[in-house]
Amino acid sequence: MKHAKTQKRLTREQKRKHEILVKASIASISLLVIIITFLIVFFVADIKYFDYRDAIKLRNKDQFDEAIVMFENLKDYKDAPEQVKETYYMKAFWFMENEQYDAASYIFGSLGDYKDCESRLTWAYYKWARQMVALNEFDGAITLFTIAGTYSDSKEQITETNYLKAIYLMENGQPIEAIEIFMSIMTYKDVKSRILNYYIDLNNRYVSAGIKYSAGVNEDGTVSLAGDYSPLATVKNWTGISTIDCGDEFLAGLTTEGRVLVSGNNEYGEKDAQEWGSIVQISAGGGHIAALRNDGTVKAVGFALYNQCAVGDWKNIVQISCGQNYTVGLKADGTARATGEWVQGQCKVKDWTGIMQIDAGKNHTVGLKLDGTVIATGDNSYGQCNIDDWQDIAYVSAGDNFTLGIKSDGSVIATGDNSYGQCNVEGWKDVIYVYAGNYHSIGLKSDGTALAAGWNGEGQCATAWGDIKIK
Image 1 (cartoon, helix red, strand yellow):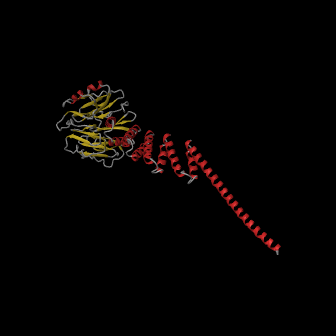
Image 2 (cartoon, helix red, strand yellow):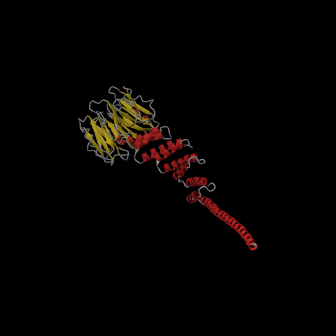
Image 3 (cartoon, one colour):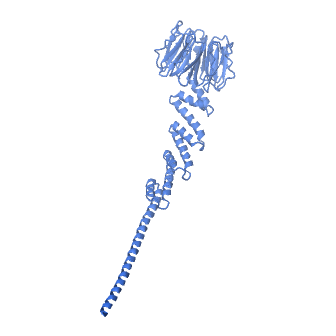
């Protein structure tokens, strides 16, 4: 019995110790788990810390893409998401410093309202636009300057870019497009003088046709004649001639120094034009002469019964042309004006716009538009104004009762009176200038040779000169 009681006490004691041992084991395991968990958390946190630090180091070395990947992998660790934005922000600045403005603008745009990205975006657009201008990518530059809005001098740069684009187009054989742009920025820099110079070159008459004779300016500045030119005795002594124009019974020439020479009839004081200076263009009518000065004003002298010489108040003119008894002028903005005989409606040009060249005939006027079409007004009794279907025209000339046009491919078309064959120009090619006279036509080819068609009763179509000035 006593032994049994002792055994029972030992069993309870063992059980109690066992329970203590179990609890101790559980506590030890729990502690171990806590320690292991702590070590894992510490280890992981330590790795993220080093990754975070390495990402910053990479960024500081301009290794932005690698840094961005590391920050993105860190997810919510510290301010990793914010550091992703900051790294993109710094990358955009790096692009700006290395003139990769397109890439910088893309990043600034994607960052939205982060820091000052909105203002930085317009900065990038502005710099990118300036870069495109330097590469002659004008349209793209204008778009970017427009987007940049009020940043810096963006508005002024749009005008400057249009100016540079027009110059580029002019230098690369696209004068019509250039003039159209120049007309939109008329008051900017030297635009007016550039337009004037273009029209001077466009309308320099190197060949011309009178009633009984033809004339051409040679490369050496002398003048060649064909037909009955007996009234023009002094022409053989002319030198330094840059352009000419035939009146009914006289010939006017402009020297390279801007002086006017006149040979032939002086019934109406046509030779008084020889007193003028600073002239850049001349035109001869039936009995009067008009001249364009280098300041865009106009002078005229000669037969003035119909007020064809009333040009004293004309300004901003870039081209002039004399008809039989009237004068027309083209303004730098593409509009036209006229003075003189109105009976046939030849002076009804005040509503014309978008004109790049104008020419006065006997009693009709034609204008070449910027789009290559032609407009006409005045006497149409011979169909000389039937030009509504003309397209792709590069130059026009109005004669007595007919009209000539050069197409962009160098061929020539005509309409109006063909009584003397003056409109038989369908076979002409490689033509750079035409002159519609009274009863015959003269064409100048790019090789300096001349063509002629029409009345040849005085030998005025014998124009085998071969050395005519072309520019």
